[in-house]
Every structure is written in structure tokens, then in C-alpha cells.
Length: 264
Image: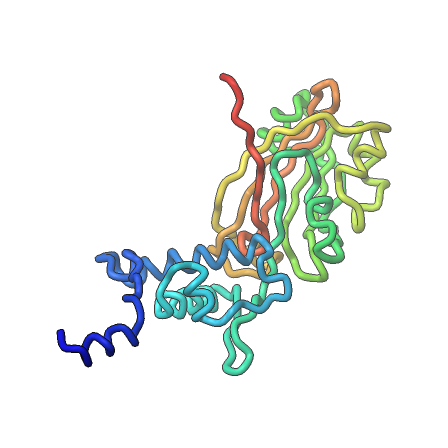
């Protein structure tokens, strides 16, 4: 290499490191989906409190991705309705997501405290003379026993987040019906009715597609993803008192837990 060529090479500085995934044989669409998931996690963890995302170059550096992958990823999130993109404005989060911890017994309204004003639209609050068989089994109800059914749409700042269907044993349920079901968490109303704290709950979380009625009530499209939480809450002595099914918009809530590894 002659002297002039060497000077030119030095002026360009050190060669840029190209991350392996930029030249991977994986399809571009797969790389974009991976970056979209990374951005979705950043949004749900509250990394952009003002709702504005950094520009493509900054995001690319932060995620160790190419600008093309970031651009396509943001396009995917725009198509999901999670962000909007406008020239001169940038990329802005449209739908906020809320964190709900699964490592303590808390009602959804308690988990959403601090995110906005939580209210409930009460769709039903009534005695149920013939509860579903699986509900009667979970609550240890005798044949022909009456339960109390409460169904509510949970909203944060007026926007629907979840559809909650609750069945209570009759003794507790009658007192719950006299409580403020529009503005209070069901756990708070139950504990007021029993005069003490609840004990524990067994929960199961699964993904599902929204049926037409759920979709209409939550302001989403039929078939859109929802979290379904089955929760059986017990009194301090282990007696089951509250069987719930919560259908939660998957684009509005992040489920979190801190798990500790112990001896088997």
C-alpha cells in the first residue's frame, strides 16, 4: 500500500463492527419481529415515560440492530396500534401498558394504582341460582346452592382494560352486593364484608382469542389476543370464597413476577 492509500485508510478510522445478526441468513421479517419484541418490552417496562421513542439511529444503537430492522419493527408496532409514526413528530406510544405483579395477592385495581383513574362499569351484580358446574365445584357449593355473580368492565382513564366475571359464595356475596362495586377493587369489598384479610389465591394464566362479546366490551377486534386469568381466592382458613375469570387486553397489561429459587 502506498503512503497516500495508507493515509486514506487511517482517516476512515477503525473498521465498523457488524453484528452477526445483520448478515444472518434469517429472513428480514424475523429480524424485524425480534426487534419489535425488544421495543415492546422497553415500552411495557416504562423506559419511555413521556411516550416518545428515540429516533431510529438511537434505537438501532441501543438494540444493536440495523436501522432497516428498527424501521420495519416500528412499522409492525404501528400496525398493531401500539405506536404512531409522524414525520416531524417521531414515534409515539399510543396505548400505554400497565404492569401487574403475580407474586402477591392483589386485585387488578390495586395493581393499576398510579397509572390513572380506575373505574368499573358494572354489567351484572345479582344472585345466581344456577352457577356453572365448574364454579360450583371450585367454590365447594352444594347441589342447588345459590352464588352471587358480579361482572364488570375495568377502565383506566376511561379506556377498557379487562372484563372480570366473579362468582362468590352466597354468604359473602350478599354483603359484597351492598358495597361500592363501581369504584372499589373486589378484594377490598370482600375484606370489608368478612371483616378481615383474605388468605391466598390459586391462579392460572393462559392466552386466548377474544370472543365477539369480549372484543366489543374491551374495544378490540374479535380474535385479538387477551390474557385469561383464572383465580380462586380463599379465606385465611383455606375456604374458597371467590372464583374469577379475568379477560385482559394483552396490549394493555404486562404480567410480572419475581421468583426465588429454593431447595426442592
